[in-house]
Length: 203
Image (cartoon, rainbow, N blue to C red; front, top):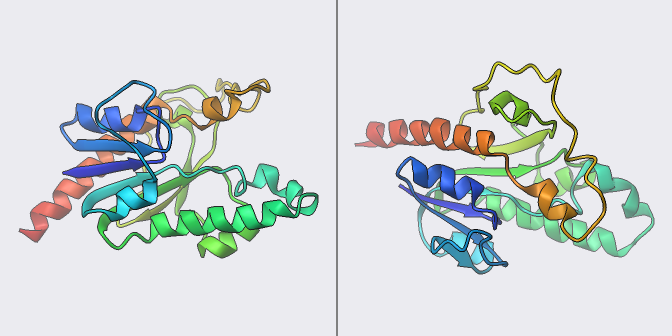
């Protein structure tokens, strides 16, 4: 099955899918952090539209969409334009006509961006639900995919807050946006199984 992980440079999600035998590729404007040959350094939407995909998972930039930054919309007029562009890009990924199954991820999104996207998320999860004892609410907008089910017995009571306490610096955004391995493994296993079941039913 052909899988595209759009807007990913870390390779975490790509590696999780490839470990289960999927023909998974990542794509970002930046080169892959792990130097993988299974990475397109290109515009994610162009690659996503270039062929048919069984599954596209996208991690578009949340800078202008997330609830934590909504206050800046009232102080910087330029952010409105950037917010609308970012939300339109998000929606374009979600509505890809040539992908059978789609999942787009972001933090909690403010209401202005949700208006452009057209709807709120289908479900949200935390890294500790998949074995990484951290707090980072992750929202998912999906098409023809089930909600992720927890794979860990952790209850969040011991979860760290390192993502939200990350110090300022050039690598802060990159650190805060990287997918946790446990969640990536759950996506690969659960969504991979779902897509395999759907494909068998079509035959």
